[in-house]
Length: 163
Image (cartoon, rainbow, N blue to C red; front, side):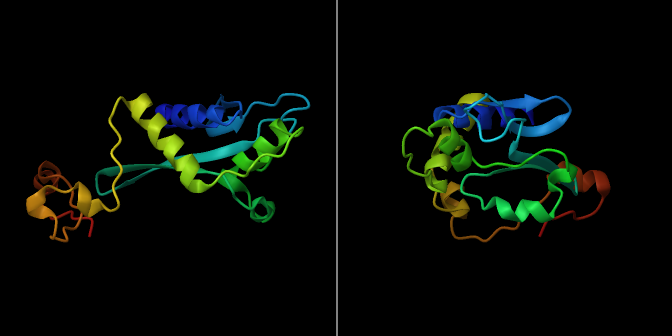
């Protein structure tokens, strides 16, 4: 999770938005700078979490880029009721208040996140239009369900396919 936070922190920095981790709160938060940030206290910019099902762990994040923040007024996001939520476009508008800034698109930010993911996790990121493109040639046209590793299925002596 800390590496995923690092990916987002680096990506936000590319757009001039200073972010941070907040002790005991997962995710990425703005670092308040008087007269620069949209909020006077840390605001959640990116929620993160993990999910474990049938022995498979999934990690994920939700980076608010163009998000309409009104929806957060009627919920308690991530169970944290005393902290504001913000978006990358809102923070950029605050940082660059002296000039007009073109709002970011999800496509633009996703490229930054993918690039920084490769750097942080020391992996080559290869663009793909679909999951099928990532399969070996002999499996390109086969619709395979996701399955738990064979060792795990043997361990539980049952078929723990995810499909």
